[in-house]
Length: 491
Image (cartoon, rainbow, N blue to C red; front, side, top):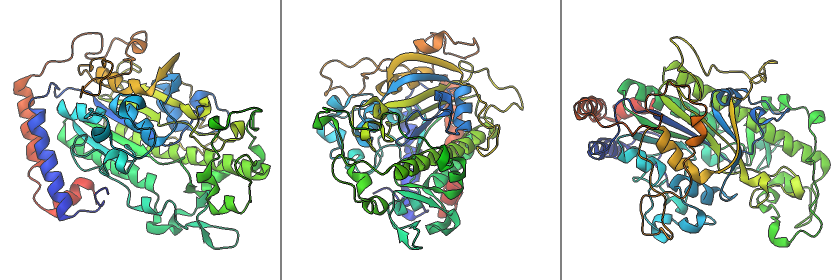
């Protein structure tokens, strides 16, 4: 189980040991104090239902604003439309056939090979690596520890309110609480008076503030849970999507002659109390049309709620003057069907479940370096009538895969790109099966990037790095009380 979110003697010891110990490997790494930071945003079950992907209904102004300063891939695909296999795949840079994970039941380091991960590689190259929310899939697929301590410099953070996601917190028409699929809530009335993604945003901002004071390169991964089911989100977001404006999927019927192996009966939807009440036949029984509209409404509302969290996070990056030194990568583990082919789930090979949003903001490459006082990511209220006017920036129509995330982030950050994997590669700890997408950025080079023009990775200035390391150790390793740990996490 992940460590508890509040400060404790155990967490204090873990933080002190892992943070201070990170410098033993950093001293032998090849990063420089001027290295670009990385903010990786991973969303759960988000298909490209966003304004920047041409959706005319969904309000996603903050993600669209990120896209306007990014290189956006229109045809990006996950390796598998299941959370754990997809996340392990793109975080290791290996395909599911190599990780030997197609479900949720094994840990790749035990059952396949001791493969390096993206955050592990950055950590070994002198970065402070941090995880907030759902980055690795929880459970045995990440060794019940989010792959700690391999991947992270400090223990990963999980929101305390996460445990209420599937409990009876949804107010039904009968006035009672239920475990429903559709769950718009008054945030003040739910347990702890907050929601997991809100807590994740707050924690991520606290970590950005801390890293700003330490002036040390960091890799921060933030995993958001929405729009994963249940659709538990602040009820005001329903107002953005009146039911009369919600259309049905353009191809809502199970295709004639579809092989059974190609269809998933969406049992995780059927077990919700409000869906059970519909008495839908298994496996192909259609959902009533009015309830279909309500599902789509809640999915879109969840996306807009997610967008506000991304907006607050990116505004903090701006306010802390980190936008000029931080790569931002945004993606999802896979898509989700909203009635297409009669499906209401993932777990298929239809492109509606395997296609994902993917974009990279690289300061000086996909957008000019912000000038003094300039804000690239000011928060945009999705309820504002003009909030959907943002146009996407550079786009690529080429077919790309999430397994390419590892080499691409390494290359964009100026680190040496891991070599291509041999076949088989179970015995090789560090290699990648995806292509480096760097060539897609070259045609959009603004000529201002410090070391992204095909030159070798920056060489470590031992004297400067030693000074930076000492300052960082002084800031972190002097922590000696639970109160100081509390200040680190802002609690």
